[in-house]
Structure formats: C-alpha cells, structure tokens
Length: 298
Ligand code: GLU
Image (cartoon, rainbow, N blue to C red; front, side):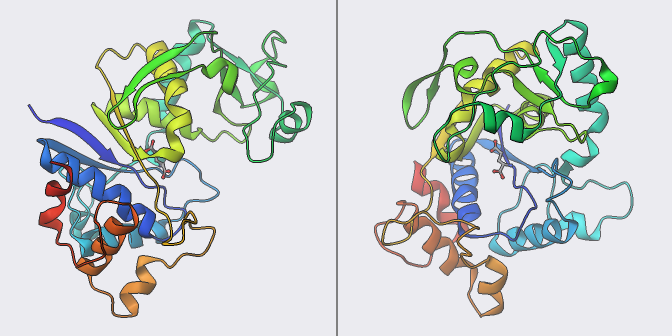
C-alpha cells in the first residue's frame, strides 16, 4: 500500500513561490518513492481565510500541474453537490470537538481565560520568539462558561524524532511553548490542534513541510501521542525559499503571487524551474516540467 503525505495550504492569500517550493517537495518526494498526495485546505482560522483565496489556490495548483491523489483540485470546480472536494478544516468541527471532549474526559485539558496579550506581556521573550505559556490557568479550575479557550496539559520531557533531511532532533515542548492552546477564546481551533487531529484522521505517514514549522514538530508529536496515535509519522523539513541575495521570501514582503505572474504571461515550467532554483534544488534556473520533479529527489 502506498504511503501518504499531504499538501496543506492555508487560504489566507494567493499561491506564491514558497508554496510551489513546498509542492515540489511534496509531489516530487511522493512520486519518487511511491507515496500518494492528499490535498487539505487548512482554513481553521475563520478570520483570515477566504473562499476566494481557496478557489485561486486550487486553480493555480491545477495550472501548475500539481494533481493530488485525494481531494482533487479540478473536480472541485465542476463538482455537483456531494461530489469529492478538497478536505477542508472548516468542515471538521465535529471531529475536533469529539477529540477535545475525549481529552477533557481524561482531565488533560483546562479552561484558559488569558488573552494572547496577557501571555505576551507577562512572559519575557525575545522579539520574534514565541512566549511560553506560564500555566496561569492550569490549576484555576475555571468553569466551561468562563471562556471557550482550552489548553492541553503538556508534561515535561524531551521528544526525540528523526528528520529525513536534518537527522536526529530533540525538542522539549513543555519548555518551549508550555500548555498548548487547542481552541481560542473565540471558539477557533488552533493550527497545532487541527493539524495533528487531521494528520491522524487522514492516515498521513510523512509530513513534508518548510523548516519554519520545525519548532512545532515536538509538540505535534506529543499531542499525537496523547490522542493515541500509533501509526508512525515521519518528517521531512525542507529549506525555505530565499531571494538570490539571501533574503527570505514571504507573503509579507509582497513577493509576487502566481496569479500576477500568470496574468503577466509566465508559464508553468518557468515558475517551477525558478522555485526549484531558489530552493537550491537546481544549480541554475531553467524550465522544469512537472514530470521531472521525482528526479530531483532520487
Ligand atoms: N497549513 C500550514 C501552512 O500553510 C502547513 C501545515 C503543515 O504542513 O503542518 O503553513
């Protein structure tokens, strides 16, 4: 049976070169080593995600030639009601609620009334670094009606894992982030929680993603263990895209979206080659066809 990985964009903006780098790794590695790709739309954040972005993401992926094995992009647009469409986190409310209820029944969660501001203000942390939740509400026994926010109790300890590219890693989630927020006070599920629950529900075997998410891996493994995950999970964190002059590329820097590049006449093979070059997968920029991706990883 094929092993499974996933491409899991958040529809908070248009597809950009960083997404293409991730997609090149996901599809390239899957196609090179007999894996299948599931497409999951990570729209857990209701305030930042928009359907317009989702439609554009799916359309751009199609245009570039990234066809998922599960959660097809093209069938989405044409799908009559009830036909397969991308897995969407916004449709998984019942799944997340059931998992939270199971954790709570084991007394592994608690109600938290702290705001993000409270935490940032009271915990010393360097600029750009995440503040560790100090456990203010851990033993406060707030009642469910006081806030929708829930945290999971993290126990001290080191979580070791092997990264396929970076080798053996060790992280201490309790020291890094403290008790993990799984639902915020507005009732929104957090990325950390939704991604772990879904990777389990979707039988994901290998997570292939950018190094910017490396620090999340230990806590996600810890959470998965609490949820009783038995299926082994492997990790492959790839380098992020950099400009030719070494600067990190991101949506925030207004790096051009694929939409704009398409509108300006760019073609798919040129964008694939450019992304592969900027990610260090090609020695020089050149046109790259979707069929050449597996050879980049073999
Ligand atoms: N949805 C996340 C993002 O767009 C990726 C999730 C993951 O790969 O764990 O950054």
